[in-house]
Image: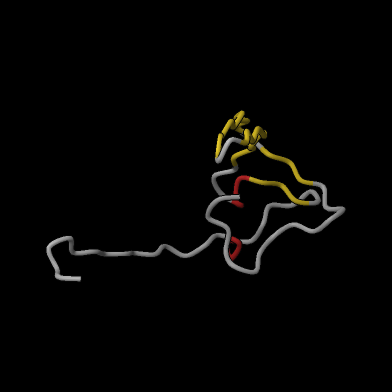
Length: 74
């Protein structure tokens, strides 16, 4: 679940409904091994229904701004 606030999540046994799921097949090779798995992308916890209710607004991670200056010396 992308953009979920730290500390927020679903528990084992929760009923979770996903409104617009995006199922993707991932296939990766690394050091001679092949890894294949399905990924279900959920863009926001607010797009879920957990145990029949929408998560609170506090389930959404706050925005974060990160800046870098490629011209600055290391």
